[in-house]
Length: 77
Image (cartoon, rainbow, N blue to C red; front, side):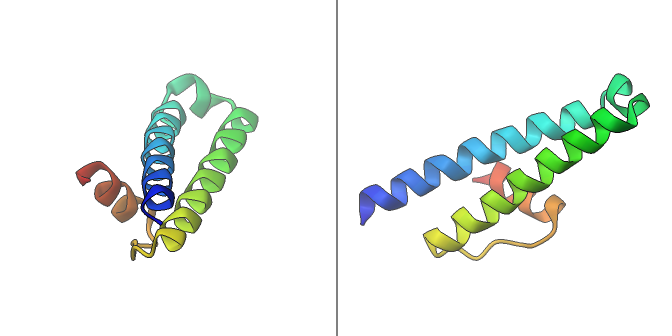
């Protein structure tokens, strides 16, 4: 069980880093000018947030539903 929790925690950390990377990419002026690229990045971000939510549910942790609150919690840990 501990190994599974460690694996889930690692997955959550990786997803958190990926989410931060995507948010930075979304704020790039080139991405903001290209609505198709922006949509793709936002879709990828939504998928990553959903994966994080599923992983957190699996680990038994209670996580906030908003992206901002979730990121603050992920970064704090």
